[in-house]
Amino acid sequence: MTAEAPRGPRDPFVDQAAGAAVKAADRAHVFHSWSAQGLLDPLAVAGAKGSYFWDYEGNRYLDFTSGLVFTNIGYQHPVVVAAIQEQAGKLATFAPAFAIEARSEAARLIASHTPGDLDKIFFTNGGAEAVENAVRMARVHTGRTKVLSAYRSYHGATSAAINLTGDPRRWASDNGSAGVVRFWAPFLYRSSFHATTEAEECARALQHLEDTIAFEGPGTIAAIVLETIPGTAGIMTPPPGYLPGVREICDRYGIVFVLDEVMAGFGRTGEWFAADHYGVVPDLMTFAKGVNSGYVPLGGVAINAEIAATFETRPYPGGLTYSGHPLACAAAVATIRLMEEEKVVEGAARLGEKVLGPGLRELAEHHPSVGEVRGVGAFWALELVRNRETREPLVPYNATGEAAAPMAAFGAAAKARGLWPFINMNRTHVVPPCNVSDAEALEGLAALDEALTVADGYTA
Ligand code: PLP
Image 1 (cartoon, rainbow, N blue to C red):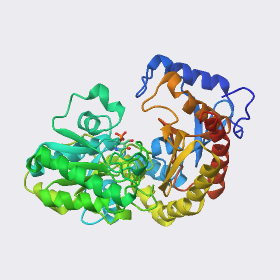
Image 2 (cartoon, rainbow, N blue to C red):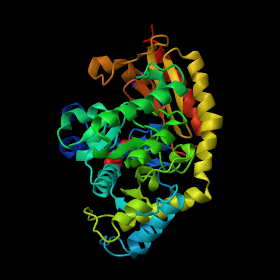
Image 3 (cartoon, protein in one colour):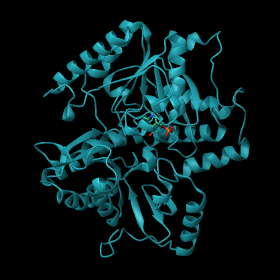
Image 4 (cartoon, rainbow, N blue to C red):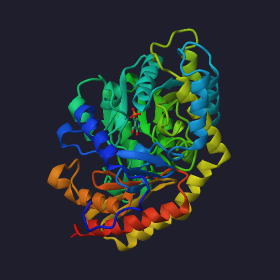
């Protein structure tokens, strides 16, 4: 943040000494994810409400990241906070083998929104565990070991999940799960298939998948795991026929189709699940994040009737101490009910159609650094480039340090204007809470407008 830049709107809460103590204890004892610990300088956060959070210095930020894309109903929603408090007073914890009200009701509510016959819910503590268990279910169900996943993907940081992941966070741990094979999923803007239309991209991506399966041996493949709309990797909405095509291929070869909706699920895309946009029903669907807006860690796998039947009389070889934790499930029940009552999913669809989509496209018109705008609902990405013709990314793939400076400068400019942006490689993702107000969204777009001027300075 530059000294002369205007700061974000001020919040009355200022306690620099408290902030310094929080920061000092963090730096002394907290070991953070994905980071060189000695290079970290985390912002000390004093509080959050709705679409905003604030630090101890009095700076307030509009959160266009929803945490890590999980606060689909914003921070500190009083209804969900009260539900957690009430559950804590009633039954704060209980072992997973018993039937308890919060868990039963959470499973019932989730199953009422999942597509098709995905009616049984296995609860986990987050997204990676959901993916681990979906893969395990597919392997036991089919008796096969290989699992196919896409290069542009993120599925979590545990053993099988990180090996399925297509992004560079996999590289240091690429030694675990036998039988993971990666392929290219469709992404017209940077087509791996030299396609120039969505229809071409779709047909060629499906043919590439068919070829991969043929050369790997269809009878060796347990599952294909795809994010319905890849999130962290760039919010690439697939061409309309792609996921139905994958469904058909899976059916033909007896391969379990796993859709990972950890990021795209629970309203993010303007449908309860992104699969609903494409009329596709997977065999297994993973979820986490938005299921309870991340208020208490929770994830899970929604299981179809056929795979559930495999484990009717044969034990499922997996489990977790906190599977279906009462506090997490109570938060899910409250979140889902209020999403129904407050029409949060419909609101996210409208937000995308009426506010974010048009607003971001307008920004693209006068900022040469914006190569592409794509997304749906409250789930958008701006692809930032040095040159619109060549589509050279504003920073190279997986750039760090000096090479990543243009994105760092863009990020600093956004923060100086009171907007906390989501940045991944050469992209900024616009992923506010699904219930962000129109006025807040417009405030964020105005800050982005100014920050993009900084990115424009790196174009050629
Ligand atoms: N799958 C997807 C699509 C995700 O976006 C993520 C996290 O961002 C995960 C899995 C892993 O979830 P978690 O970090 O809760 O383990």
